[in-house]
Image (cartoon, rainbow, N blue to C red; front, side):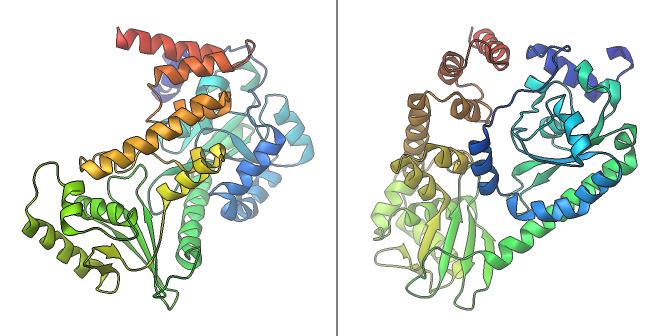
Length: 399
């Protein structure tokens, strides 16, 4: 097949693969997760609770049609690969195994990698694969997103013969992915609970990392959970109060919240609106504080960092705190957390952790991290050409 006769999205993928230095003659994809790391990563992954459902629904279909079902994370690491032993042995010959990375930049054009890049369900048929060794296979894949935040969690894939590239197969995979998202929503709704019982019997959980607005989950004494999305200003207030368990005076909160001298009346209006939204039982005054047992995603990352659990800290870091906020107190917290985590990754000397950072939206242009990653990988690493390609890109853009 020539690029002139390709579907446009496949041709674009070929260009990305070639630009990253992937060889069309390469036999397999790189194994980037050792068995022990893979096991821990798999157990902690957000898709772990719904994998049995996927295995029951799509895994059985894979068995029936001489195919394999796979689930990868958002960076294209294959976490689960299931099928009959003889089919799995054939898949092993092209590196389609648990622990391998099938990002387009290291494995060439393939359905899981394209689904991550494009953010939508895709199929890749036979000769559309970039690497020759993979052209005996066809595959269909669909992203799976967090039902509340929309964050990409991973990709569901089925790989086998020519029938795997049909629209019907792609529709089946897409339906299974939507089923997983619905099950995740059900699990979140019924199983969320704070780590400790709050003094007033109410728990509040805040998510602000990588988000423009804070997501709040309030669990009442009856066990019922209510989910709210706060406005940008209320998000800033909630973040600041959650980080000051002893509370803040109006003057202190105003200094942290406003870039210029604040009007106390404006702040009181915002706090009254927030109290009407959350309820009198949750927002106290004199000083202003949250009257509940509060847990936050950024405090969890900070705790992992303090304990030296860098892998868990990086896994929990979903992006900077309220990245568009210009509130002085929020900016300070955001910059401190970003700097602490980045410095810890650089000090670690771990190519895997550095790769996680540079694959992210916030780390893709981090020149120093790319250089450190280049120095950390082995000279024979299949990632080296991709790293050098990214450094060359940044050299051009910075020049």
